Amino acid sequence: MNTDYCLSRRLFEWFRRIRHRCGYGVHSPFAFNLVTGVIYCRDEYYAYAPLSRQRKAWQGLLSEKDERLLFRLANAQKADRIGMVGTADRRVEAYLRAARPHARQTVYASPVSLSELIATCDFVYCSDFLQNCISADDIFLSNPVAVSSPALIVCRSPHRNAASRKLWKALCHAPSAVVTFDLYRFGLIYLYPNLNKQHYVINYF
Image 1 (cartoon, helix red, strand yellow):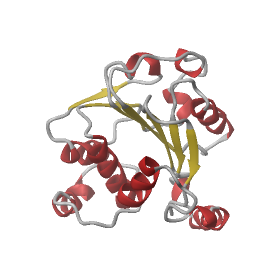
Image 2 (spheres, rainbow, N blue to C red):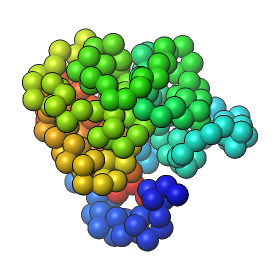
Image 3 (spheres, helix red, strand yellow):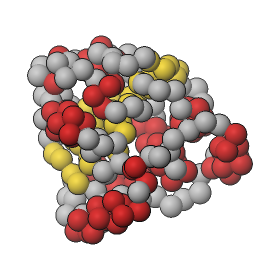
Image 4 (cartoon, rainbow, N blue to C red):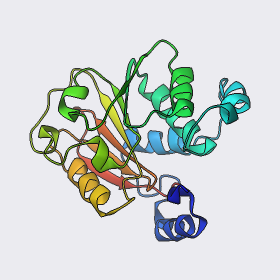
């Protein structure tokens, strides 16, 4: 059972984060547009209907809502080089491919060197427990890393256990991590050198 979808836990987090709904308190134009126009977006994208019809035939761990969020994030990022770290998830692969049909998509065995991966990918999705995807002594955590183009790292279940939470906090404080978002079920790390460093907690149910 995927405990990310435990109703009691989700309700607890929703009430705990109630002050962080709908972009309240977010003053950065970039962050506000991401929260209201991507994370909370309710538009029906062209690819949703065919993906919804086929998703039951594919193996996957996420809810349709979360798969659609990944679709929107990749689409907003205009990702051209997508890296998936950890256990292959056919549904996530399909949603990312539909979002960016011409992007190169590669699945990497974990753990991976994040500092090397972001040199070749502009969208990275960590699908396993965070500590299984990224080494705790990854150079990315302690040293600035050259980024050839703005990149996004999406971490699944950053609060799953103590090790994941510790690594997620380290990632948020990494020198190259600029804008970070804690959605509870996902952690977003934007490597955008032209923005100011900031961390946001978002009430994503």
